[in-house]
Image (tube, rainbow, N blue to C red):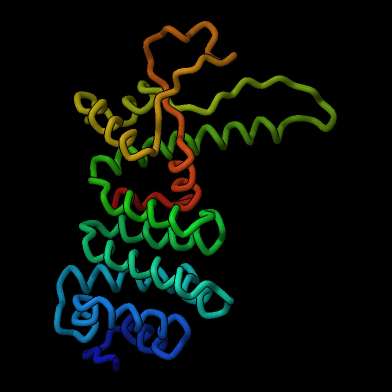
Length: 244
C-alpha cells in the first residue's frame, strides 16, 4: 500500500522517511489489517483520529522507539501486535497526555522496564481508559511517591561510609497527603481512589509495620503501589503528562 499524504507537515515528512524502514514495513502490515487506520493514513479521514496518530508517531520518533525497532533483532510478530493495539487505543483517546503515556509504555517495553508484551498491553488499556479526574489523582499520588523516594535517597546519600543507621521509611501515601494536594476533590476522593484501586494501580495498606507504631489507629488510610502500578510509574519515569 502506497502512502498518499498531501500537504505534508514536517512530521508527515518524517513518516514518509520511515516508509521503507523495518518499522515502516511492520506498520504497513497494520494499516492493511485495520481499515479505519488505512483510510486515515491515505488522508481521507482527518480530525481527532489523525491528530492522535500523528501525536503517537511523533512520540515514537522522539523517544527513539522507531530507532530501537529498526536497529534490533526483535520478535516482529509480538511487536506488530503491540503496535496495533497501541494504535487502536490511541485513536480512541480524548487527551494528548494519554497518547504520550502510551508512547512511554512502549518505551518502557523497549528498555525492559516492562517485562512482557501482555504487561505492556494491560498498561496501555489502563492509561487509555483513565478519566481526566482519575489521571489527576493518580498523577498526584505519583508525585508524592517521587518526593518520598527522593527524600529516602537523600538520607542514604548523607550516610558516612561504615556508619550504621536505622531509618524507618515506609513507602506509602496517606489519604490526608492526597487530600491536602487536591482540596477540590475532597468530597469525591473516595470515588476516584476506589476507581484507581479497581484498576489495580494502588491498594490500601492494611498491615501494620514498625513505622506505624503509635499512629496505626489514626484513621488516616494509607495506600501502596501495586505491582502493576509500579510498572506504570517506572514506564512514565519523570514525566507528568497524565494531566495534559
